[in-house]
Image (cartoon, rainbow, N blue to C red; front, top):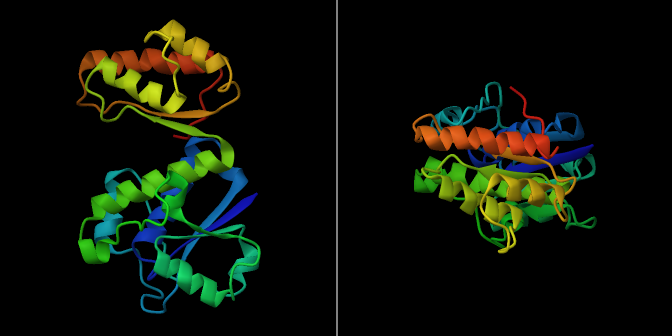
Length: 236
């Protein structure tokens, strides 16, 4: 089991968002039993308080429930208790290094480093008031982190308005070689060949207001993933 602690300043916006986003992702990938996930603060300012209401609303809009979560401060014993302690910005990282007297076992990580945004901070909505951008940053970081830890790949069709846009997403996420055509037979060949054989994929399907042909074609794509044995279990 991999134990992850997400950390921010107050534990009422960014780190609880990361906690509950990652919990949702591991469930969708069928990996719930493989992870223990929590979050904490570096400060004492918000101890005992629930997730900040605007952050809670944005999570709820994306189908994520954080009911019951209250802020707690990191403890020195957390360093031994968790495999990874993941900060939202460099100030969090500095505070954790101070709390834990360094990072002797190399457990401290910046979340957006996993997404190739080395050293960048997850947008802090306490100052920006842009809670949707915080959601975007957290989702990007958590998806990339889960890919790095388990090989799970997330394919997102939610913004697709045309079939061609779905293939653009597939080309990017599957690193689709240029000699493959954009059709379902080619998709099956990509999924069953190297390097994707054995990879688990999670599909985000088009939204209800997407064109009918896009939603129907996304269903056909899903069936190809199923036939290739490449679709991760998604919890209801």
